[in-house]
Image (cartoon, rainbow, N blue to C red; front, side, top):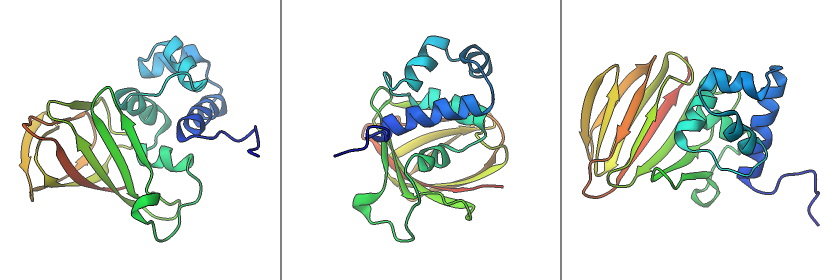
Length: 191
């Protein structure tokens, strides 16, 4: 029998973690709303597990909490093993935007790098207003399809096999122009 105090799903554990991060800082929902630009009611529903966050909302929250998305998701997964079999790699989906994120090598407290696989449906756009951690280094290697990535107001079109690397200090945008989805690997290195 499951312990009722332990959230069962990743979404439930994420909701609990978001609530804890806010209360650790002594912020009200109103204060968090001002800092993120996300409505108070949406934040409340997220923390109660009534709503799954979109990529954009999770990006806003990661920015104010000073975490990469991978690190936040790792915090709800528990201690990652040294070897991560494909079937055990955490997957997070934003059905609304058509974005799927697989933590290939989940972050670890003692390590600075992580590897993520992303897929975007044709026509999908994912935008981040700020870097979750200013100066975070990213290497994006396209495995299949085409993606347009905008960093520092410069758009880069990448095709299968291309790699873009940069340090992120501001907004970024990922767009899959199609006609098929794009699949890419992201190497993230914390400063």
